[in-house]
Length: 119
Image 1 (spheres, rainbow, N blue to C red):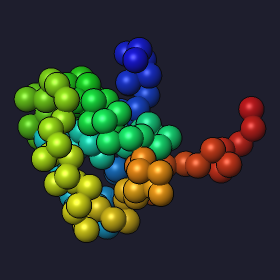
Image 2: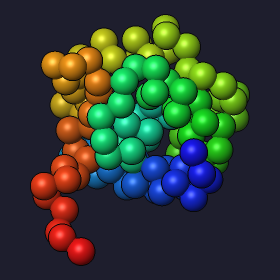
Image 3: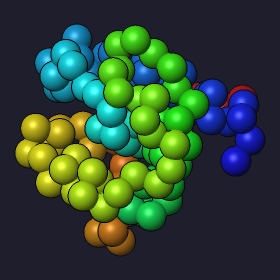
């Protein structure tokens, strides 16, 4: 994936997470793998399988440098299944992420294609 696309994912993801924090959907502090996973799913804008999400979140976390998301410097590779399950199974994130019937994951706050204006 190109670096400019990853930068777009990070920018969009951070914006959506900021909105979710202000609406009290997410906690004020999100760190490490959780931050990388949530920024990725929010910023990607399309459903991702677990494997795609974990791999891309490792890349996003390794690139994203933001003092509001601590412990990102240690992320350089694929997010572990344990780290993924800590987010996927956490009821506190159920208003932010959702698993589709086909097993892929989406962010509930990400714009849907039908909500975007035609260009």
